[in-house]
Figure 1 (cartoon, rainbow, N blue to C red):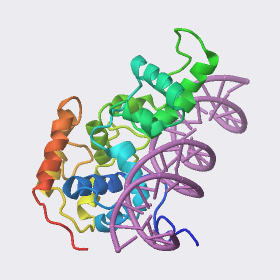
Figure 2: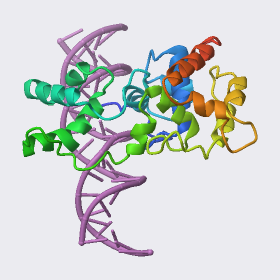
Figure 3: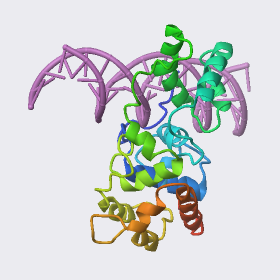
Length: 231
DNA sequence: AAGTCCTTCAACCGCCAGTGT
DNA sequence: CACACTGGCGGTTGAAGGACT
């Protein structure tokens, strides 16, 4: 028996997620949840495999994800858990709130494994800062990350201070998706309509602790449209 | 300054377990 | 019981960008 492919290969997009796709996914899940990952991309209007959507959500877009460097305590936890659990990354991640198995796996392979191998007591073998340190600074919280989704063409490797592409907002509002979207007045509120620069209010809102509340409000507001899309 | 090497990490792939029919 | 389908997991890859020569 031939295993069914996880998704229709034809016509589905692969590779890095765009900010538009992130926005669609986040808005959809915040409005309707993710009952069925396989059906989700079709319902949300994404040309992505359901598996890809789930991965993007769980590893990157989930609101409770903690970004930034691992603390000493987290590193120690990973090391000790790895000693007892082995490569069971999801089990290790379960003990580290806000961290994903993928992230822990990456940290292990790029840093902690070497640290163990080198066995240098009390010293950090990481000789240089995280390469995309600018991302870490900019995306300390997921709310800030989501704001980066809205403000940056390339969320994976750029930071929310890259404000050169506000045009995507209009593209987003024009996106032909079949579920209710955030009120356009919201976007016009936070973005200057004709200019290339975001409003000072947006800049102030999308930084710091307030950003989480800000985006929570956005999604709460979007949720009020609550009407299931036609299947 | 230019070319090459190295590091990082988001994303993909294949497999497996659980569940429903 | 057999099969199909789905979600989840772990291994691996490849693009991007910094470090080095």
